[in-house]
Length: 132
Image (cartoon, rainbow, N blue to C red; front, side, top):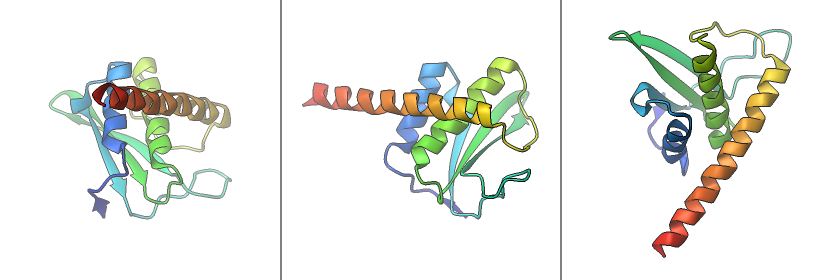
């Protein structure tokens, strides 16, 4: 089941990230899902808060970022999955299979997502003060 009501700032954050990293926003779709998330692969217990998937359509790659409602911080999860997308685009390794998490790589994406989310909120405050 897909919930069309997103958390506050969810779609704005996607637009901010697409602009910041030069990703065509027409190729990135988001889903805020109440479905049960898949378990983490490998020997670790737990589940994925979000997933990045892709498809080929008319010769173009399109991306779907799924954030599960069980995520503690949906915007941070969106930022983390977007960091994966940017890394995949830079490395040219789009469409890798889901495997056990690489802790160092995941921490790198966590830090990037936190920095991006901080910049996003700061920009929103600046924009709001300009309108006031």
